[in-house]
Structure formats: structure tokens, C-alpha cells
Length: 399
Ligand code: PLP
Image 1 (cartoon, rainbow, N blue to C red):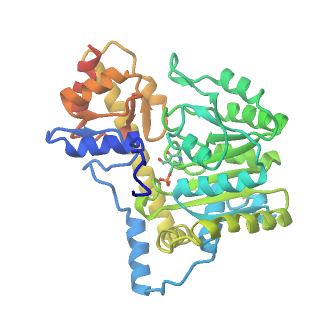
Image 2 (cartoon, rainbow, N blue to C red):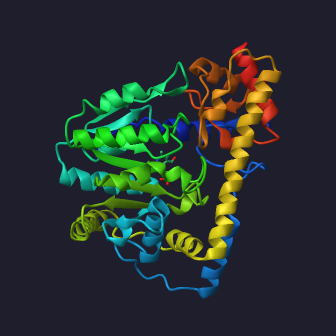
């Protein structure tokens, strides 16, 4: 008989499963607020002008498609480190950082996780409660036990910071703590700069290892502003890891553009760590693809394209904010009694709305408005054409 005869069907990915249901829905009024993707006011995934220009130049130059180095394009890796730490960063001038090009933020997390497993085979990984739905599975697949630390406070729709600190203070030394650098997914609730300081102190005191996940730099307040956690970690003297994703900020989802950056104590340490990280890459996919990284490097290293990109990113950020204000207003206008002003405080693409799984189900069946069963909606999927309909749906299920 077949070697696959007894293979069981794996559970469907909850969010991708939602997309399949959405695609099968024949109602023309349907709205998909489930996926974590930025859409324009026309409901389209944008191709940024800066990206288009860099791609055109690259196409015209018609570069050969040789293999990249294992760690990817040096110009890209340098640009990523500068984006994270700023151009005057002492970490960079001291060569204490190493960056490798990775396959999206997911790829960066996985290479980092595989490397950490070799370095600290007995560590436990802690993720926020709740967290991006792939964090747990990804670190478990790297062989780590994964636990939660307190994060979201449903009562305030904010962060249970006391709980978070208390959990950090009881973790065993050399535990790995995955932190959302900004724009927490799924809740949209971030901690303040002052609270980040306390987190850095707790991590230092307990001898923990921070793994910062930066998937939405520029979506809250700006590129530099959203790197406040990185600035504090950089100044702390600690060693830590950062995964970067440009899926959202460059709207390059399918090109899989990300990076893993590791901060070591010295230049010598960084080069030894890089040599080990390269072994992880070599045995997984050998070296990254050329196109996406080359485009991002070209945008970041040209003053004109960089400015254009920053303007386009600001445009996305502002449009999301407008949608946040509009949905709050429109719910109030429909006589919804609950206070939705927390939506204005949440940052990034998502909002934990507080809608129950039952209410989310009703929005889907009665209105064709799709959200995640946890009540997470992607605010970046709202637009001036669908927002009234969405407000109607939310108001109806809250009555
Ligand atoms: N980390 C977080 C917090 C995310 O929200 C996402 C994407 O949704 C990722 C990582 C993965 O990014 P990428 O799509 O670049 O792999």
C-alpha cells in the first residue's frame, strides 16, 4: 500500500481558510477584513511608485541571475541595519551587528529560531498572549517549547503591562522572549516608550534573550518613531535578535523580502555568529532570491526613491488612521452604545474589536463581512466604499 495511506489531513490555516471561504462567497457586497494586507481605497494591493521605478531600472539593466551569497545582498543587509538602528548607530560602526537577507519576516524568524536552537537547545520561547498566529508553530517547529506571557487586557483593550512585567520577571535565565517591536499583531495594542524601558531592564536583570519582530515599521508613527524599542535595546548593551519584514511597508508580500539581524557584543563575535547563521541558511535554501532584496536596496539607497517610499508609506499610515476615525464615528452614528474609541489608540493594520466569535460568525453569514473569529479586523482593508456597509454589519450584530 502507499506510504501515504495513513496520512491525516492537517488542520487548515485559520486565516488562509477564511480567504478560501471569502473567495467562494458569491455576494457582491462581501468584504474581507480577515487578511493582514494593506489595500488602497480602491481595494487593491498597491504596487508602490518607488518599487515600480526601482524595478524598471533593474529590468533595463537586465542583470544576470547568478547565485547570491548565502547571506544575501550586502547593500540590502546594510540598508536594513541602518533602517533599524539609524545611520549613526554605534552598533553598526562597531560592526557588532550582522544582517542576512531572509525570505520575509517568517523566514527571518525561522532562521533565527533554528540558530537559537543550536545555541540554546534547552531554552523556552515566550510569546505574547495573544500573538501572530504563526509564532507558536514556528518556534515549536524549531524544537522549542513555547509558552505565553501576559499581554492583552480585554477589559481596557490595551496592554496588561503589570502582568507582562511580572511574567518577564519569573522567566528562567536564557529564555527567549519574542516581542512585537511595534504595531502588535493581532491586537493593535503597543506598550509606551517608558514601558519598553522597563521591559529592557527586566530582560537584562533576568538574563533573557529578546527576539524583536519588526513587521510593520512605519505603520504607527513613522520609520524612526516606530523603532523606539530598537533604540532602547541598542543602548542597553544586550545581545538580541531582530526579524524584519518588508511585506507590508514595501507592499512586496509575494517577493518574500525580510531580514534577520543579530546584535553581538563585538565585531569578532558577530563574524563568528554570522558564520553559524550561514550554515543554517545553507542547509535550508542555500541563498535568498535576488529580486525583492535588490529592489528594496535600490529604493533605500537612492535619496529620491527613498523619499518617494517614505511618502507612500506615510500615505498608507494616514489612510489607516482615517479609517480608524471613520469607523468609530460611523458606529456612533448608528447608535452603537459601546465605546469604540480604543480603535483610535490601536496602532498598525489591526484592531481587536472585542467582537465575539458569535458576532463575527453573524457578520459573515448575514453580511458577508469576514473577520477573524478572535474579533481581529484588518483596518487597512476598510475603504470609503465599504466602510458604511461594514459599520452596518457591526452595528447589527451588536444590537
Ligand atoms: N511577524 C508578524 C507579527 C506578522 O504580522 C507577520 C505577517 O503578517 C510576519 C511576521 C510575517 O511576515 P512575512 O509575510 O514577511 O513573512
